[in-house]
Image 1 (cartoon, rainbow, N blue to C red):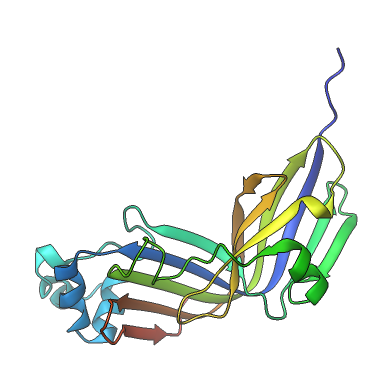
Image 2 (cartoon, helix red, strand yellow):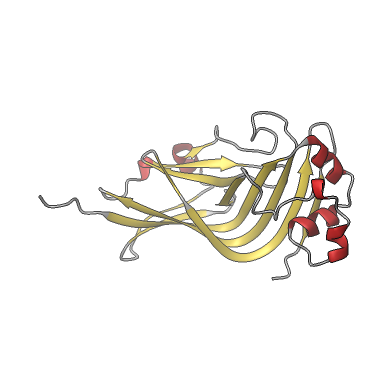
Length: 209
């Protein structure tokens, strides 16, 4: 019996992008960091080499590196505004290309009902840490199918935090979730604590790398 031929594609989204992490915190931990300088929070979650700073933080309030919080939500995605999607086959032939913010694409392919924010991400207003990296570049998703690419089977999920515009946080093709890998030129990073009824404690810093 002859095996089914596989069709391989690269789904690439270009534009301004966001790497986002959202991790819930205990109330006591959130309260501690809401009372600290925002820059101290940023330096701590981005692993400062300042021993004096690190030693000043009680053990029970120390946090993981911003990408390594346990049980966190973590995505890479291109912002819808001015972003574009290009689908190429294994021979680098473009088989599909659209602007993410074009009305026809949005109406047919973007599921705006699946929004994940720091307010609703854990089923309610739960204190959380939000880490963001803003960059300009691309996110690539690999697709392997038994049939040629069909645009009508493509769906995008959209996320938004209070510090971002809507961005792609999930790509689904024919019901299967695809994983993406982002790369590009970094523009800004932030680290913030959010809790219901309190002013967020957020710091924005230009990357040094």
